[in-house]
Length: 211
Image (tube, rainbow, N blue to C red; front, side):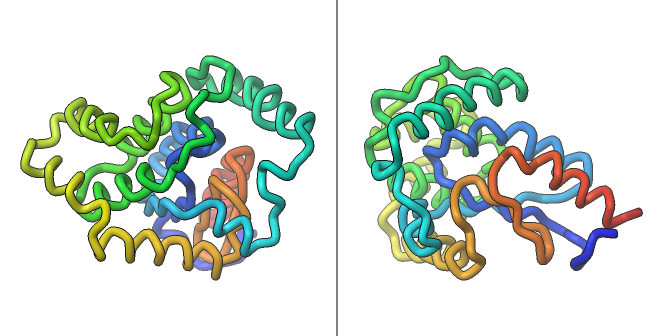
């Protein structure tokens, strides 16, 4: 029997550039929908979270391990999840992801649907190779969702505001306090599951709590 409080929400700690957050995103939405749960999307400073958890930074890992995990395994997961991906790491992937995360935080504060917007941002990066430091991308994504121009202006104008930067810092601190090790991480009740390969287990846990 599942041990823990009855979940009312899935908290999703992730970064707006994360490959595996992208590969698992549609499945996460499906699991949440199946169990009638909302998702609290929490963009976080992934490097700070990994450092706090004692996880080796990506650039210190063997190239063979990086290729296996982020290319070979990622191709398998993309095929398994039936998620579109061109099979390569975007040329812009090494650029800063902070603006993308702040964009998502700002959009959430302004009551935009991050189920859609966060997925579209991740897809733009992993399918189109979009540069996540290019803020014209954020404008485009809002336009594709028919967000009113005044609302879009408010979202984009608030990226450096105290409200947005404080929320981003709060998300990161909450992830560190919870012991998050990487992106994506899902929290339901007292349970934490790291990695999109745990989504089937998340589904099982949510099912089992009602058994």
